[in-house]
Amino acid sequence: MENPTEQLSVSRNTNYERSLMTIEKSNVGKPAEIFDFKSTDPVAERVILGKLIIKLKEVLAKKEPEPIASSCIFVKVKSCLERVDIKDIVHIQAMADYVIIHTNLKKYTVLCTMKRIESRLSPRYFTRVHKSYIVRIDCISEIENETLTVAKHIIPIGLSYKKQLKERLNII
Image (cartoon, rainbow, N blue to C red; front, top):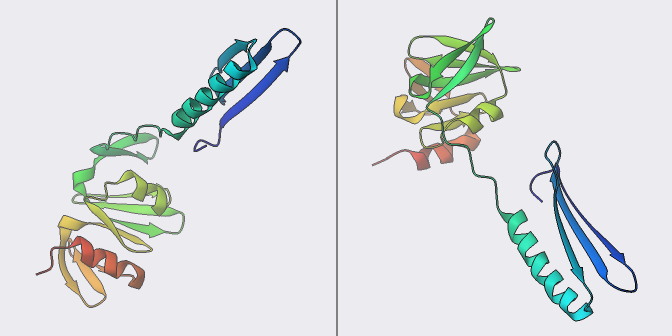
């Protein structure tokens, strides 16, 4: 199961007259869905149970729809949230437990990990070039040896990210 908070339990109560099987699927914080199925015929019970198991596997294999990529993020500045358009972000720099989001006009220091911020940005427009840097691909103006230039900032290129960067660029 993909969702660690999802629980699936199957209980079976049998007596002389019939068999009652209850399958309960629940997420923490959400009401449970209960499927009851009664049978007096053991062969029919196996067939129905087989179909039910196949259907459960299909339901559990389905992933939650991914959130629609947003055109902005909100960053906390003092006591309020300020909107930052994704198209305005030039590059992002890691500084210990913080990231510095560099835009065309301003810098924002945010308590966040690089991994978390990278997951919020579209890989179509952004790429990781160093353990401490994410850049907007269309803002790269020059690449020389082990560095690149983005909006007059010189950024190092990590050895483990160099191949990935070259694959993302239109090199002639």
